[in-house]
Image (tube, rainbow, N blue to C red; front, side):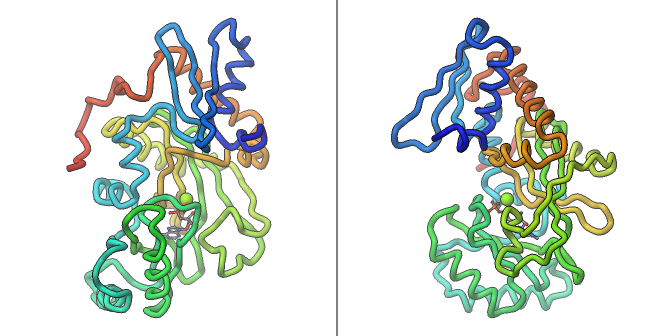
Length: 313
Ligand SMILES: Nc1ncnc2c1ncn2[C@@H]1O[C@H](COP(=O)(O)OP(=O)(O)O)[C@@H](O)[C@H]1O
Ligand SMILES: [Mg+2]
């Protein structure tokens, strides 16, 4: 991994933050590069013990918290009644039924006025896929196709999700992203373009032509994200999370998904107007946490026992 590649990762910014403070005289950091691993480990040697995490991983969450966020189906099952998540159902990739039969069952639900499903629907893998196999299905035929494509690939989890579409007749709702730490929104921005989005990349905002990142400082928006982040932090020990979100025309914020191995910090640093200040600023805060607590990812955050426990059985 060269330096350019490394800039995507949070760990890179934490090493920089550590260097800004005088480097190894204060807290030595070592990076161990496993030859076959794409995600080298970094260790900060603190007075309170070693703090170790993978470059591509979040440094602060519990393993349960990571799983809750990374598994989109678990997240909906656990939080669907509490947080603004689009209604979701799951079929196993190995479901014995064929795509036509599964699709027919879903179509029947779209015709039931009491069911939240209506076309278009989102079909996507149950785990993060960098937008691969994320489809907008407008009718039964597209649904069959999307199900087939998802089921033919065993990567990205063992389920296929069918999900309420966060958009309307006028098109997609506004794409947003937010980074949260310890229950507070740190950075939130809109991802927009003035150009027409080709059909093939509607669900891949990184590929939108002329896409722009604009920091969102609207207090009504930030307050909604804070509520979500605080709830996850207090009840499930989710310390660090990046949300892909949508904002509807009434200004309501929806969670599309959460990421605990957030990438793209290099893009935020480069493309946000204040990116060169706020991205390193976030890294500073995280380094403060490492220094203050010497917390290792295996240890429970101090607040993890507060509130309800996640039901993972
Ligand atoms: N329910 C949905 N409604 C509208 N757009 C969606 C929905 N789910 C996903 N998308 C679009 O697809 C993109 C990728 O989906 P996401 O769940 O973030 O998958 P990935 O883990 O691959 O990033 C989102 O950023 C969003 O633009
Ligand atoms: Mg995403």
